[in-house]
Length: 322
View 1: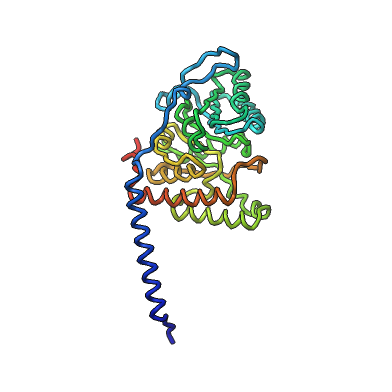
View 2 (view 1 turned 45 degrees about the vertical axis):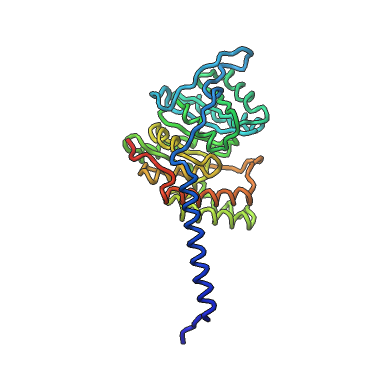
C-alpha cells in the first residue's frame, strides 16, 4: 500500500520550494549586481619597498614584480600576523635548511598589519642573512592570510614559489617531496603541489572533540560539493607553484581570508592547471588564531558564495593560460 501525503503537506512543500527558488533567484540577481568581475588589488606606496636592514636610516629598496624574469630558484612567502613569538623558530628551521641546499632562494616575510614586533623580528633575520635572501614586506593594513600571501607572491623572484605558515607546523625538508611531485605534474611550466595532512586524519579525529570532527567532515563535504574535487586537504599551509601559475592565480583571487586556498585550487581546476598532492609531516602548534565555530560559519559561507559567483559568471577568469 502506497503512503500518501495529505494535501496540506503537499501544498506546504510546494510553497517552500517556490519560496526557496525565489530566494535563490534574488540572491543571484544581488550577486550579479554587486560583484566586480575581477579583483581590485590595492597597492599602497609603503608596500612597494623593503628595508635593507634594521639599522636607522637603512636604504629602502624597490620590490621586484612577479611579472619580471626569475632571479632565484625558490621564493618562500611567509604570511605573519602577530607572530613575534612563533616566527623565530620557524625561520630558524627554514633558513638553516635552505642554507644547506645548493640552490638560490629568498624568504619574504609578509607582516599583515601586526600590532606586535613581527616586523622587527623579521628584520633581525634580514641583518643575519642579508636582504638578498630575507625580505620583510610590511602591509599598510591587515588583509587576511590570503591577501598577505598574494602580496608576497606578487613580489617574488623565484622560478617556483612556496607559501608556508609562520607557526612552523610543517617541516621544511618536506619541500623536496613537493618539488619531486612538481617534476611529475608540471605541464607547459604550469603546476601546483599541495602539502597534505589527509594521511593523519584518523589520528587527528582521536584527539579532536566531537564538534571539531563534525565541522571537519562538514567542511570537507562543502569543499567537495561546491569547489575542489582533486585535493583532499585544501587547508594545509604548504603549497608550491610554478612562477607562471602564480602569475595567473594570484591576480585572479578575490577571497583574502581563510578560504583563499579553496578559491586558488578551484581556479586552478577551472583553468586545467595540473595539481598534485603529497603527504607532509605536520604538528599542532599552540597559538592558533582560528575560532572553530565562527571561522567554520565564515568558511562555509565563503565557499558557497565562491561557487555561486563563478557559477553565474559574476567572477571572471582569464580566457586561457599561456
